[in-house]
Image 1 (cartoon, rainbow, N blue to C red):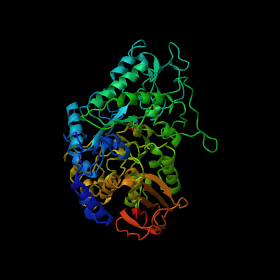
Image 2: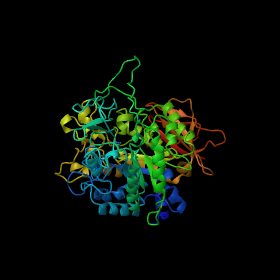
Image 3: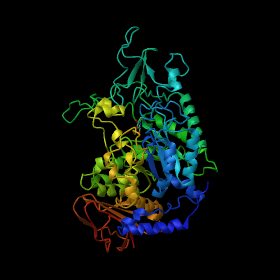
Amino acid sequence: MKYCFNAAAAAALALSIAALVAGNPASAQDKSPPPPTSQTAAAEQNWWKNAVIYEIYPRSFQDSNGDGIGDLNGIIQRLDYLASLGIDAIWLTPIYPSPQVDFGYDISDYENIDPQYGTLADFDHLIAEANKRHIRVIMDMVMNHSSDKHKWFLESRSSRTNPYRDWYVWRDGKGQTATDKGAPPNNWQSLFGHSAWEWDQNTRQYYYHKFYAQQPDFNWNNPKIHQAFKNIVAFWLKRGVAGFRFDAIITLFEDPKLTDEDVLKDKDGKTFTNAYGDISLGDARTNNLPGVHSVMAEMRAAADKFNSPKFPGTRIFIGETYLPNIAELEKQYGTTAHPEFHLPMNTQIGFINKLDVAAFHAKLDDAEQHLNGHIPLLVFDNHDNPRLETRYGDGVHDTDIQRVVSTILFASRGASLFYYGDEIGMKTTPPLRKEDVKDPIGVIGWPKEKGRDGERTPMQWDTTANAGFTKAGVTPWLPVPPTYAAVNVKAGLTGTDLLYGWYQALIRLKKTIPSLTNGDQTMLDAANTKVLSWMQRAPGAKPVVVALNFTAEPQTVNLSVPGAGTGVKALLKTPGASDPSSLTAIKLGPFGVFVGEVQ
Ligand code: NOJ
C-alpha cells in the first residue's frame, strides 16, 4: 500500500493546533484525518524514528461478539478512533492461542490466533484495515518461555530422552535420590513469587520458570530454539506485521553453573521480604546475561531480510528492557555490523514515578548524550504497572499532571509509546476483594500485591452500559470502573475533558514541527528544581522550548539561550494560560505546560 500526502489534512491540523493553543475546548472535536505519516521511500524506512505507538490490551479494548472479552474485530471497529489520534502503530499484547494463565503471555501455539480473539483471517483483515489508515501493527513476541501446554513442552516433559527435552531448562534437585526429590537446584525465585523451579514427578527433574510454573523457560543454548523462533518471526512478517515487542527479553539466559542469587540486605544489614513473602534476592544470575545480544543480532539479521512492496517500511524490533542504567540500555541497540533492537524501551525515564526535576533532567540527558545517537523509545505506562495518575498524580491536579507527563513523552527526541486509555485519563481500579482477582500474582501476593487487573480494565468508550466496551447485559471479563461516567472517549471527543485533545495536539506537533520531529534535545536551566525545561532543535528549523512546572505553585522561568532569539510563539500550553511575550519570562500555573517556537 502507498501512503500519500493529504493537503486538506495538513490545513485542518494547523487549525486544530491553533484552537488548542487558544485553550478552546472545541478543538477536541476536530475530526480531521491524521497528518500524513510516510510519503517517501526514505520516510518508509525511517517511520519508527519518531513513531507514536499505542499499546492495546486486546482483551480489554473492544468486544465485538458479546462474550465480554475484547477481540480483533473490536479493534477493527475502533481503527478510525485510533487514526484520529494520529498514531503510527499499534502494539497488541499476545493474541496467540493460550490457556490464558498469564493472559496470553503463556503461548501454546505461536502461529495462530486464540479463538477468543478471532481467526487468522480476522488478523489479516485487521492488518489491511489498519494499513488503509496508515497504522502499522506490531505483535508481542514471547521468546523467554512458552505455555506448559505448548506441544514442545508436552514433548519435553514426556521423557528424559525425548528430542524436545533440551528445549527447556531441566535440572536434578539438590540432594535428589531415587526416592527423594531433594530441594530445588538453587535459590532462584520466580518474578511472580516463590521458587523458580517446578518438580515434574513423571521424569523426576525440576524445570525452570522465571514467571508462572505454567510458563517454562526455553533453553536458549539449544540452536533449535533459535531456528524455531526465526521461523515464527518470518511467519508473522509475511503476514504484514510491522515488527515485534520482545517480551521479557533480558531474562533469556541464566547462569549455567546455577550459582545462587545473592540475598539482599537493607541499610541495617538485615534481610527483607517481597510482596510474596519471599526473601529478597539480587538478579545477577538470571537477568541481563550477555547471551541475549547474539540472539537478538541473529533474529534481527533474519527479520531485516523481509521487505515486501506490499508492506513497505522498516520492520522494527522493540524490547521490553527494564535496565538499571543508560550504558546497559545502549548495548541493546547492538553494533552497526550486528544491530539488535531498533527501539529498546527506555524505562528509566517514564518509571521515575515522582515529579523530580533533577531525576528527569539527568535521565533525559542520558538518553540524549549516552545512547550513541540511537533513537530513544520513551514509555510511561503499560499493562504491568499502575496507571499514570497512581504513580504521578497528587489527587488534586491529576489531569494537569498528566499533561506534564505526556508532554515529556511526546515532546522529547525519539519515539513514544503509550497505553490505551491514557489519552482519556483512565485510572487504576484494582479489585477490592481477593475472590475477584483475575491476575494470579494478585492471588499469590494478596493483599500486598493486588495484581495487574487494576490497569487492565475495559476501555471506557462512552456512558452506555459497560462503557461501550461490550453489550449491555454482558459481564465483561473485568468490571468496568465506575469512573466511566465521567472519564470516557465520548466525553474526550466532545470537549468536556481536554485530555484527549491534548494528546492529539501533542502527537500532531511531534509529526509536523521539524524540531519536535527530529530535533536534538538540550536540557535548560539545570539549577531549577521546580521547572523542567529543554530545547528541541533540528537543523534549519526554528528551535522549540518546552517548560513544565513540577509544582502546585506558579513559577516563572527564563529560557533564553545564547545564540537564539527571545521571541516565542506558543504551540501548546495549559488551557487558560496566557501567552508569554518573551523567552525571558515564561509564566506557568500549577503544573503548567508551555511548548513554544523560538522566533
Ligand atoms: C512481561 C509482560 O509485560 C507481562 O505482562 C508478563 O506477565 C511477563 N512479561 C511474562 O511474560
